Image (cartoon, rainbow, N blue to C red; front, side, top):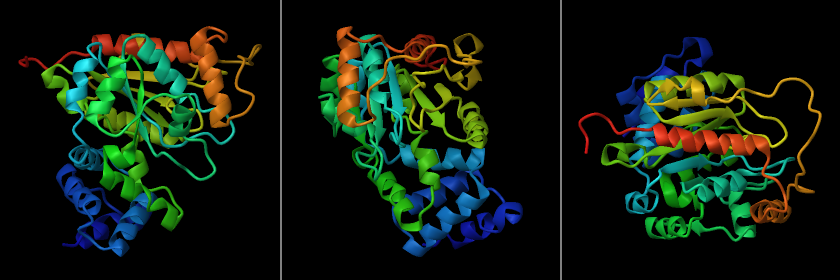
Length: 324
């Protein structure tokens, strides 16, 4: 098979390219994920989308294709009766401590099932997987291990290589071409439990962005997909509020913005700063998380507010009418 006809549409530059429809996008991404096309075509697709940018319909098709290739985690859902929060973690820490695991632990403390997914390693950055390992938090590979973590009231990290192997391979193209690819946007939108809502499984995903233009495209997708999600500017691209300053967090329930659950950003000059780890290493971050868990350190107010909003959002998620 060939995706050349699709590349011809999306590859005519920023001004000349056209966007694909949902069905075309799904077919294109299925071929790319399943490696039914050449490496040259995959590179051309990634570069064309990098220049053009993803439309709402294209993101919809890409996410549908990716969800269909995620491992089945449905049996773990029985151990999360209050619902599930999904934290896609794909950037890691460069300068600031990566506190995604702290948010995950606070959510688990409040009785929520928490799945963090992302890469285990990233050159030059501290990944959430490394923090989980340093903090002795569960790193899982399948639904059985995930369910065991939730039974123990702990959050769990799953490498994208286990959650969706074809996505892991596509993400790796970045290290060949030297540029971010559509896989990065799609990975941050993955919620493997979203399709289980008709069966009574409630989930909310945290979708974070690093650049303002992605805030617009991600919001449009969440509305289009009628998603349950929190959209925010992440801390160095991680799905956790900046411990120093409350960021803007928009909550969407079934695609509609839930104004009363949204968090407003802190304005003005900061007068105080929370105690934070002495470095952004996995070991120092894990020690800080342990200190917060034991009560020796205070949970940063911004992360507490984010966790509270997510738990409240889960309580408001409802199954579609006419389902059991």
